[in-house]
Image 1 (cartoon, rainbow, N blue to C red):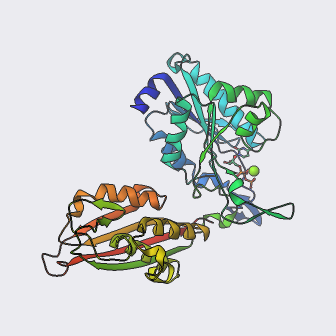
Image 2 (cartoon, rainbow, N blue to C red):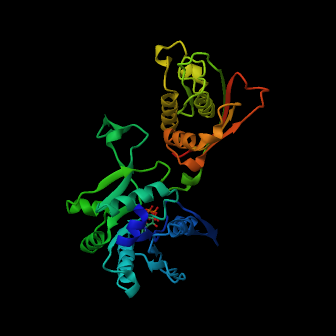
Image 3 (cartoon, protein in one colour):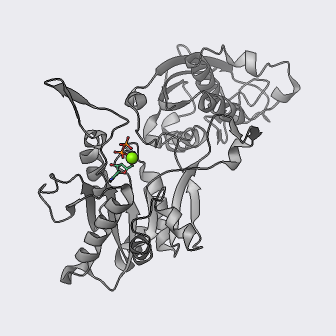
Length: 384
Ligand code: CTP
Ligand code: MG
């Protein structure tokens, strides 16, 4: 409903500054002893264009590209303009093109118009952030930007400060089109760090939403190399005869079913995920971090343990790339709960549901008649 409403009342454009020279990245080759640099953004530009083109509600995409290649074929939705001497100038040229498209008879100039400005140097853009930006713009915000806090300690002027008070600003940044275009024209020629910083010059409020640590700007040659680590986890718990024990699997309460024996909530599936994560991080197993002998383990919510391990992984610069969990039991029927389980685990691990797979396996009374077994495989990818 939100999207349908938006496409009626608001037109949506995307501007992609992709006219830099990528000097720090130093992609390229040698030609007769001369280094020829290939601008880094060409590694990702078509992917990013496709990403926005796949959003059915986008009315037009304008890319600012280096002089000489702005002849690229235009389509009904994708346009190329020549970039300028700095990022600011490139964005301004692209906004000018958006303005021109909007003024065409098909451009529905009377509609409120919003624009997302996204650097071609950030290939790890996420659908979640993009929909959040459109939603907030649709609800009347003039400027919205994603930001993350650093995972490293921060020293300013020789003193440590709380890293959560530091915000690292990302793109895409979303704006009311008329406002940001006016600001770009007004401050043309001035070197500003990004587009939202122009709003600050005018005292215009900028809303901040949670960004994504994966959405890094590719700047140096090594930025595209990743470390990957895998881990495997296993756990098994016996059914309890205590009618007050609640069965919990993947953080979901399963009603009207025998619970499992355990010191904590006995969420066998989450325990296997924790062990897989700890395995990938080479940090031992669940018992070393959450000993059963500790009073904090009694009836503990295992989802909180998993969230803690996920924060440790993030602190080491790793995020979950994908997770595969197998729950082995004859009852309950996992299929019935699997969507909710997937959503719950994705939310604890701060990842998208596409990265989580949960499946049930019955054993026809051969293995798991007295309890539940769970196994998990995880792949962690470095983002630092
Ligand atoms: N950009 C642009 N026009 C410019 C300079 C930069 O459109 N005149 C774009 C880049 O292509 C990139 C984004 O702005 O998508 C962020 O810039 P940056 O990461 O600094 O890229 P480059 O300027 O290409 O890299 P470098 O500074 O290392 O040369
Ligand atoms: Mg630059």
